[in-house]
Length: 295
Image 1: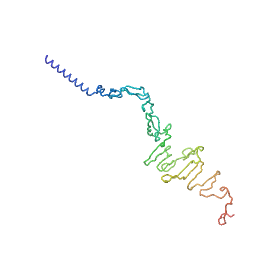
Image 2: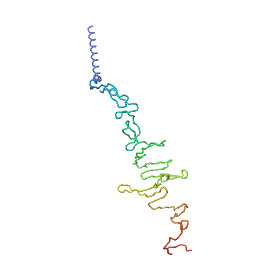
Image 3: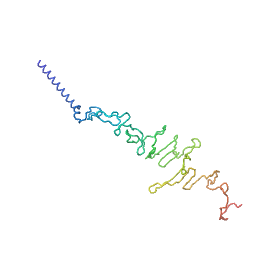
Image 4: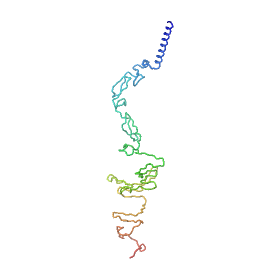
């Protein structure tokens, strides 16, 4: 009996010691609410959970203007009505995602308070869109499409059924030029096709507008000074700064008179080619100046 009592006593002591150690470990590993409360200043409370878990906060919190509640418990967060955010200590309708224009003229979206506009990232060009892909703000000076070709290929190459229609490369603009130097086959379509075609609303144009204007530019004092080399005004009048070489002759007027033939000469001196056959202005002529048929 004595041995049994001693063994039972030892077992009880061992269990007691193990329990004490376990409690000590738990106490050291977990923060005590009571300890946290004891560290808060006067007028504050310890928040064991929620938005301010593990911190000391005021007993009562004042909320921004327009909040659901004017005040809340210090451990709770103030809340704005649905769709509103806090801006300058007041609940206002969110501006997040609303369209805006940046200082550089780019399209963008506002932040929640509408105090800053972030430019929208560039988009890829969509092929066969059902509507305009994007609208460029009126104040923007940015191009709709901006490419910088640093390789040897063309900048833009557009084709119709495998044939080049428009090519833009480092040497300029090419219309209809095919590989091997062949041009676009206008005859493949209906009659009356044009390599270049444009229509101007005459009533909405100005007297100084041009249907076609070609210029060269020279640097003068750091500025590019243009010189007009060829111009077709809205009336169809043609002006060229240099001479004209015409290989096929000239047919002019409402009567379609071939005043210059393919050799570059006036065919004859007759009423067909001259409006006035009077010789009144022919002076100081003598026999040496006149040759030809004497009959």
